[in-house]
Image (cartoon, rainbow, N blue to C red; front, side, top):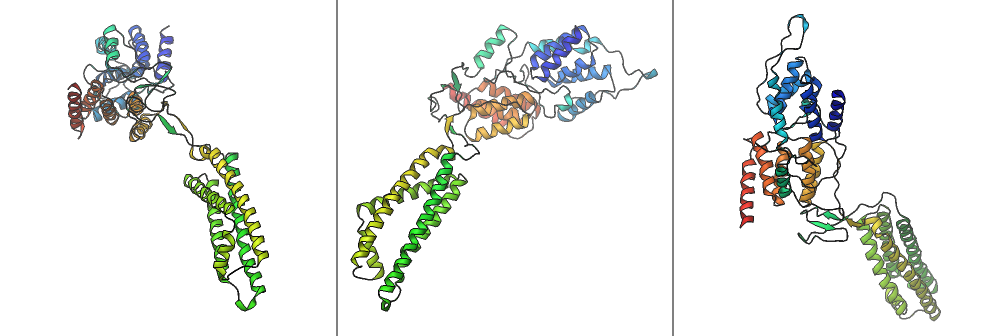
Length: 464
């Protein structure tokens, strides 16, 4: 039965259920206080460095050659200054186990430790998730000394008594039900249909990155732009051909260079259109805006040409320096200009329709932001929190930093970040707790005392 309890405790520790693992391990040690494996796992689920030290010393008392326990104590000595036990000496006959005082196990002290849980309540975190717990203290590479009477931040921790539960309910951040979503900026409860938080007035929508695969709408838009560019090149070739015809009509005047100006402008427009098509193929946002602007400008020009087709002959006469064109040419130019203008209107309307339909496939859709914490190592959680903080999402950043503290309860950087996040969210009691723990771990680290004083000033301003 005791072996089953130990297996359940190890499974709970590996799932990140530190409180459950601690209860089961202590139950195992009450029955078998010489269980070396239980003491080693217990050292990985307690948060007070002195409790960790007791567990590791008991492991070495039972097995002086346990390398992991020795490494854990050496780390505690190097980081926190807890004294090292003397190096183990093997007794005669090769027996590595020595008698120890049962009182040194300090089960009473560790049992009292459970009564202080939930003194610091945490924000709503994801339901129990698969988080790997470090069974050996050698893996606790970053640590700090918690404040007296304070427990480490534990997501989902349940208060063991009514008083602690009342304290947790008073200090806990805004709780939400299944129909509400916390605002990532301030934590205020919001509903799915909300587009802006009523408390902090921040937008609750974020732009979601589009799919990596090009949508049919975007592909059609790209080919339409490419086709339009090629059609523009063909129209541009009409003007040099017209110049040759005019030269054949009157060779004495020579070739009219001015007629090449519209051709050059049209070829330049075609090149810009091909560039826009290329940017659209790469789903560039600025390429989409460029294409939209060119489409609107082209549509306006085509509508103007349909309304005033006589502009074309007048423009040509000014370019070639002739007073009038042959009447038959004018009729053909008017008919051609009208056909080109109508075709351009149809093409530009189609381009606008495809642009509107494919907009979200290039820019991305606006969706309701919902932050989900994915269990990882404490460094990843800390960096995720920094990224969210840089976007002003302090509540979501605090969720990440809570998990960072859960994974590395003795890391000063994580404790400091979480404390400042709590202060930003006006949860000053929890901010004091985190910063006090950080200051106890690294009392001489610059900035911690200033942060603690800042919290007091902010708290006093709120009370006013």
